[in-house]
Length: 257
Image (tube, rainbow, N blue to C red; front, side):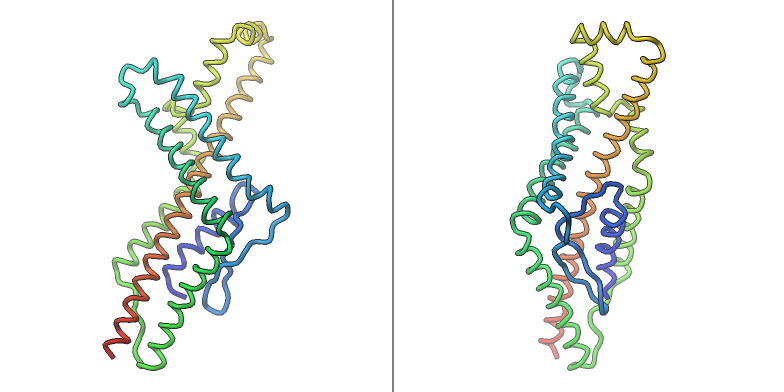
């Protein structure tokens, strides 16, 4: 199995098999006999699980948009505010992910599986033909290819392992949109503000701890989902690029023989 497929295998192990959340994507990578191929995942309540990513993405877009509407009017330099840029980035990633997920995985699931397996099979057939008929080795990875693959894998591991720490850093730096939404609700709605002030100390403390834990969990989920999207997209682009490059190189080698 070519090394560039290790990227897809790593992403699946971390962001599918060992993902903190229970749902899995509709397409799964199956390994066997030294190769990989795409299959449709067998899932309980398939329709519900297919819609679950849209609910999470909606949970990213709505808080980010609401936080921007709260912070932007009071920011002295709106377009230089790092908070607004961070929330815009999360919003764009979530919307792009929703579009790609729907067209590639939901609406055109069978087409994606068919063409993905066709490309994988074509690459394998060309390599076997070169090895058997021309008695020469197929195109191999260069040092640069190995360094790029190592760097991408390292970023994937860092994102997977250190996301909770990244959440804490974001909360400390004021990049958590939920904080501004909660503060806005407490200051704008007098009844809620009155009840919060009249609450006994121990209940007020429990409320603050609950809000803090809730913000942490929601922010961590949003970051994991964003990283998952970027990992899937990076893996797909990397594999398609390498597979296409290998196919073109093998065809040229066959033509020159």
